[in-house]
Length: 106
Length: 340
Image (cartoon, rainbow over all chains, first blue to last red; front, top):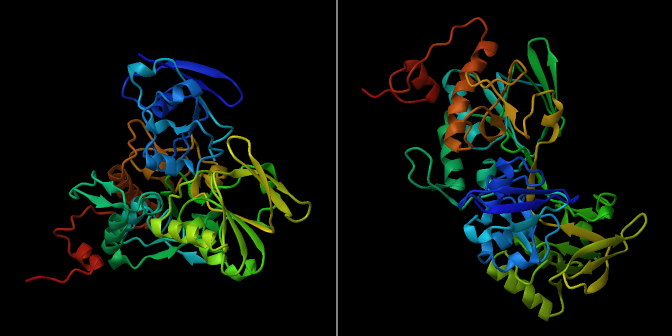
């Protein structure tokens, strides 16, 4: 299973295995990793699963769609490498992905 | 003081259907919601997105679902108290006394919490000075546009609200519209209008900028904005408007002594009662083994909570289970004309 690393805002790192076809958001929520709220449950409607993707990974991810970009307008402190973790689906090629959580989600 | 059988917190689909279930068994409900409209997440988050998993409705939208539910509860002539958030509850003999943000009070033996992920509140600026100036220069909604007449106003956001207010206020104020990227997500014609006003010198647009700091002691004097690449600009500003949409917060519900599990309320699945007698939780806000956050699950939960409410609302009566297909009593409550 691909390993995903989630780094909390304060620096605490969690590396876990996430099954293919789950989203990066689901990986965090199912494993009780703090810092990802996912209030809307993964329907790209709330921007509370916001993460900063490690720069070298950002361009390897499938391109961001406009609905996600629109939601990122509402995220807390969005940056250049911001993504919504509910829109990143885990697959073998993402083994080693690193995401950082913002200081809060809203 | 409004007396009722059940106070429902939340006018989303689950709260609405529960009004119907209560109405059928002869119980009266009042509904409180912090939004300015009925429909909850369905209306606020995805009015146009299609929903495919409502039983017997192959496809609907958040908006059409809300409309149909309102049609379904019409016979019960329900009062909605919108723009009101339930603040405090206290026990008064066999009733709960409920106080809202608008100072309305209710007295009811039952409270059904159908509040989704909580009440909708505006998303705020993250810079540290923002809290200090809230309602004193920083606003997240506009009550009276004339307040901004002849002022220097900085508007943040890229959706319809930001664009519409930038266009409107540019007629009476010195407006700068700031957005984190070059594209606006609001309606195309609005962003075209804004760009046209910019060309005519009637509106300033700063993209891709975000707020960096707010300057001023007792009142706002200016703001600093920056790009991702580190380009910095200062703008003289009297007022700042932030339109970043709404966020759901559990809010005062967390203070009522209810058991909480990751922002949800554990319930007994027979009655959907919480750890407090007479307080029930249904829909996305409740949790139990096997819980699914589906609208259809919320409907089932509401039906059961409604029956549980009967005991406290009508302690001297016996509840009888009846079908809408055949029961005369239910037909009367529904206002259905007798067909011979």
